[in-house]
Length: 404
Image 1 (tube, rainbow, N blue to C red):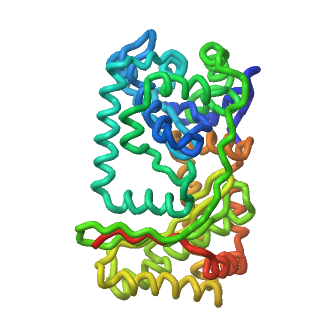
Image 2 (cartoon, rainbow, N blue to C red; image 1 turned 90 degrees about the vertical axis):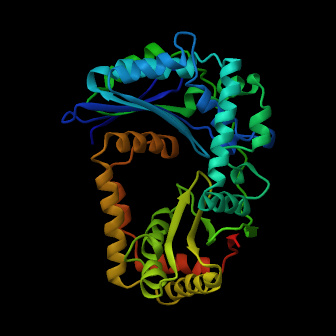
Image 3 (spheres, rainbow, N blue to C red; image 1 turned 90 degrees about the horizontal axis):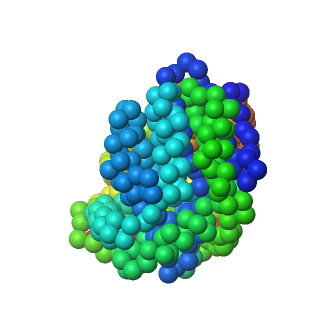
């Protein structure tokens, strides 16, 4: 493995995946803080902070940040999720020091200018409004809330509009100072860079990060149930799912294989039966998403109102068939091959390797060799997939119906 990991005295982990055959380097800071760490009255603060980090520092204006990274042909971006916020860049190998300097500047020197904050509130409210124009996105947000009601795990990543409008500047700045702690952060890079180079940059720019652990979020409590939202749109959007395994549970890899053969590709059971044979949908797919202590496994479909019950009946029927008979060897082999290929194809991207390395350290506290990942996928048996299907066939579901 080309991966090296070291830890600064303050607890910040520095990780590199050296690839000397490329001319670029992808690098970034992954912070183990996201939406599920927020209280109800501050829902959306993680996402608002992510936006504000690019809006000016003690050394750079927002325009300076954009001009400096693009002057070397690089790019800079960020995202917020339920358990992590990431700030990342991709540059040519000779510009890694600049990229780290800019990342350090926005993570340790942001000024949270009041006028910029008001403008960015408007931008995020536009983003929330835009998301409302995509019924599939709305259905998944409602599904998350239905699966994990009245808790941070079920709240929107973008935040509630009324909270975004009212969060004071002190709350946004305080979120960074209180939650961005070195032990919960990983500075990762993949590409043409040596570990000692990145460690040296980390020591120069991030040694001052607080060394105390970040607060632990409340445990997720799956409930399940049903939610319906009437909308005057053409299709009915269905999301049906169950509580799935966490990242660290033994069932994680069997759930990935189950989801792939159930509805993860064009050869999957649901795609073939619902779309190819009956023409009831344009889009249908299964998913298996995990978190530190829980997960969700389920199916999305968009269909005509009059076909919704038939689609759900087929989804249920295929699940019961897997629970009763299990997968055949051909479909199990195809599912394993899809997952194995996805893992290995991602190895050709510096960005994917960088993110994967950071996520593995946050979740498992170690880098996982690709050989180990593929071996775990290959080891999933038909009996394990059958057991998962049987468990979900008798479990309390979460169902969302959005549409006319």
